[in-house]
Image (cartoon, rainbow, N blue to C red; front, side, top):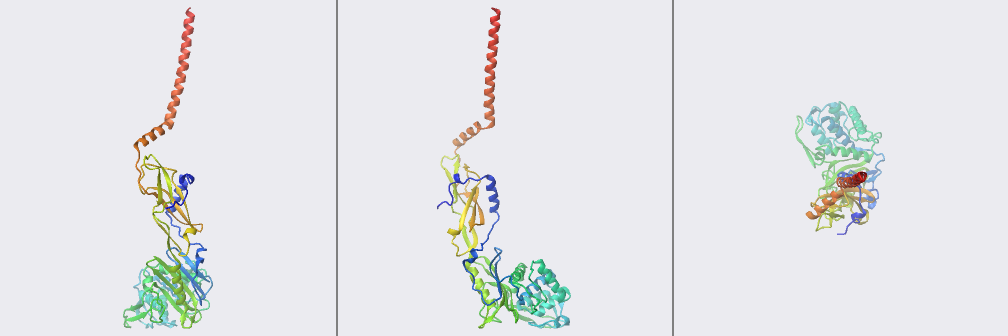
Length: 447
């Protein structure tokens, strides 16, 4: 295989620089440049805003008017769930007695709970997240904060905590209120927070939820309103990779979707948010656009091999060996980076390497670290990997002996000893000459 760099004699770096690069190799730096995202775009239409986000690489890969204000619709229930989990997270089995005051506030979609019915926080979370039940949301709000007004205050506080500067909440259900607005980017941030809650996705991935019998009602079977998960309310939109979150609609806000899709083969997980979608010619464009974005993302991006473990990066001279003059260096491990599948890696990926020293001394073990290689994509660092030797090299004991002798003769001690001998020899000569001259004078005086 062709070396990627000139021989090391022309690329020698200091030990300090090599050490810094080795540290960098421990920190993966996966990124996708803005130019890379332009290889293609999903065909999103008939909606007011959309966002597509990849979890593994913390990367927003597509946006359409994501910062424009829109009506949140049922996506509000994601924030309601977040605040409810804050209140009941350690006690989801907490019992709640449904009151007339709670039921008096209910409008829109509901399960039809009864005054005096005893339910649990966990049951209400399931009903709200699976079926988008407004009465379940209101019951949770009253139980957690004493009133929906107090609960909404917590929702807005949570929005500030999450950094959602463009979202204002006025109710817990998502029923239309012209004062209640958000953005697709904000909804995506709320959905990310929900995804991080253990068990949240499990709730929203259910095709149906069976609520146990209560003190008043028999067992209830509640179906998921997200048509990407369940066919009960609408058919033709099932997407096998979708694992949860929510969907809904209001007359003023249109059809909304927040969905997570996970592909086990590629190891990639995406979040799609669609706000203000239309119903057109019998198709709900929240789902149409969600499917298009997922299809595009799973095809347009993937983990690309930018380094292989057998890729020869450079060679280093070898000292003290009678059989080998150079040893080749290869990456310690393969490096796969999240990149556009259409990217021409031969044109866009470049390499730079550092070596710890300008040569290696035998004995050398195969797999011994000797430097690092940094990978660039369109000028940006996307990763670094240590360089290791490909083979073991034995030491020549004769060459080693000569090297020790040479090293000794170049040592300060040796040089100091020689200098001392020279000085003493000169002194000896001068002293001996002086003594001889003195003796000659004494003998001359006797005559």
